[in-house]
Image (cartoon, rainbow, N blue to C red; front, side):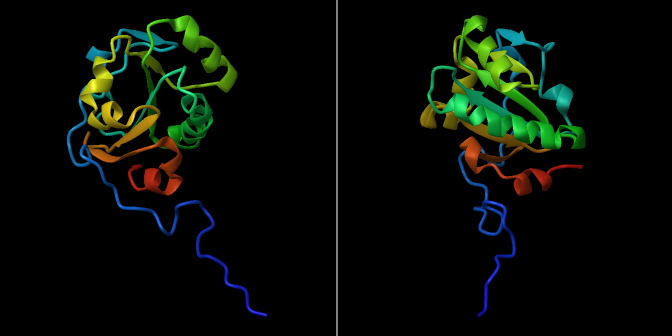
Length: 163
């Protein structure tokens, strides 16, 4: 009996879709001026992270899908943080007490910025259109190289943009 074994067992590895979306190829908008409060982190700016890939995770604590995807984003942050990936959570929320339990429960290690008036979310076109959760992978040149739902972001795609 002949068994066919796929070349890659990683989800999305061999059939990964090419980057698509209206923001791919464009310079990522700066985030620092759109965050009203940072939790467990000093202020973070994309300009300060130039030369490093950055995963921007847009979410909302009351969106039923966002808390479930936090574990995936935390795994990516842990797996690739020492290799140069900066991960930043950007949450539409004006009440830290609403977010703090999720940070503790999910053991999040990346900075969380509160976008209480949602103006930062508005700057990122697809977040406004598609809702949360939504991710952008920003390359070392500060251009958006991928965008989409967090569950579709693969380790292979991140590796392509690491130093």
